[in-house]
Image (cartoon, rainbow, N blue to C red; front, side, top):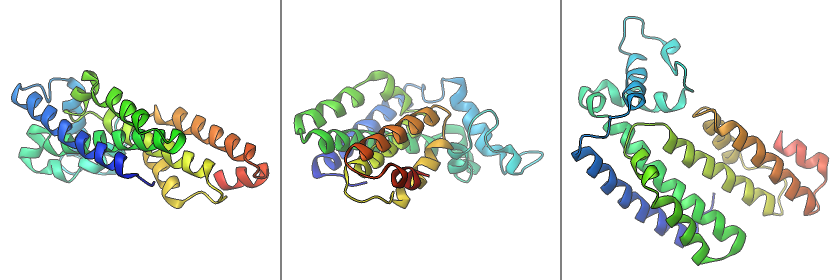
Length: 211
């Protein structure tokens, strides 16, 4: 999607803030304090390093994308023991989410103050700051869901009918990250189709594009 200068700047600030928060929790020994944080690392590691390494080890009760992204990095013992690579994914996801929220508000309202407020409400949330400092999979969900909504909003408000290929792949990635993405994607597609139709596009063509 298209990020305006303000959104890119806020994303960069969020990356710095996220890195600082991650360092604070790391120094306090809290990065892996949640059981699932350790479990995600175990699932990613055992894809290649286990008694029965295979693709069947991917995901377990979770969806596969977060573990696939970390499958190679966690083969390095230090990455596995600290969760550093997965935390990096979380921090980057935090920054992408802030940029996406800001860009979405700017696209719809043209309000820089509104974009800044949206970024601040999300980025200053202490629960979010902790999550993005761990190997948990929620930060990646936030980032991909934000990108999906931004992609669909840009499509709904544009004069072109075909959906960009990048939007489709973002939807795929979101739906392979966490189950919560499924209703977000579903509602987002329905709302985008409704807006596109209300703006004058033929309903059959809109549905064909979404399909």
